[in-house]
Amino acid sequence: MRKLYYFLICFIMLLAISYSAKAAASNVYIADDAKLLTEDERDDLQKYLESLDGNLNYVAVTTEENDFGRSTDEILESYYNNKYDDTQAGIAFIIDMYHREIILSGYGDTRFLLKKSDEQDVTDNVYRYAMNGEYYDCILNAFEQADVIVNDGFVLRPMRIIVTALISLIIGFLLPFFIAMRKRSKLSLDTEEREIIMTGAGVIATATVYDTAKRHIVRAVESSGSSFGGGSSYSGGYSGGHSSSHSSSHSSGSFSSHSSGGHSSGGHSF
Image (cartoon, rainbow, N blue to C red):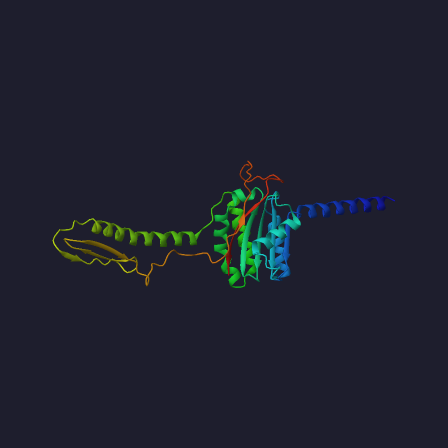
């Protein structure tokens, strides 16, 4: 009788431990529908996400279905909403093999800490893993960097630095040119009959000015054959999503289980 009593106690304890473990993992959802992860990689990802903030939901998705023309951001949103409510704070990441795109999203209060610009920078940092077929590293690094940002940490943003440097170079080239053109346009003209031909740089415009004692004719002809190549693009992907107009107060690193709905998202093609 005593042995049966001890057996029942042990059995109840095992059930309690099993239930606790299951409850602790309820904030993690992995849907590897594209079969990009091995069983060991999936287990390792599960353990890592379970080790993060228990007040956040974590959703990792891989897919290769067209899903009736929906965008990658919409597909990720449907996965999140099928498991959780979009008012609940969380982080979601998807590798979409059909659209060849990755998206990182913040839900609930998380979108106030993980902003669209942050999500764009993270996907800029990790898209090369997906491009090289290193899907586990892509997902893991995305969640690692997102967790650092949410907890007020520092993440390297090399693409932003590169674009800033390129823009600075372009401005540094154009500014002296416009200053010189402005000074030249203010030169005084004599009343004697003469002809002035002023040709600016071909990348901007071509102007011809004729000035005579009897008649002044100013004609500006824009060059249609040349243009200045504008801008620099470092993100080949999609920067989608939306965020709710509602706002809620929260302290750094802590989240309420329910908050205002909506999400923010940023992505990159690969």
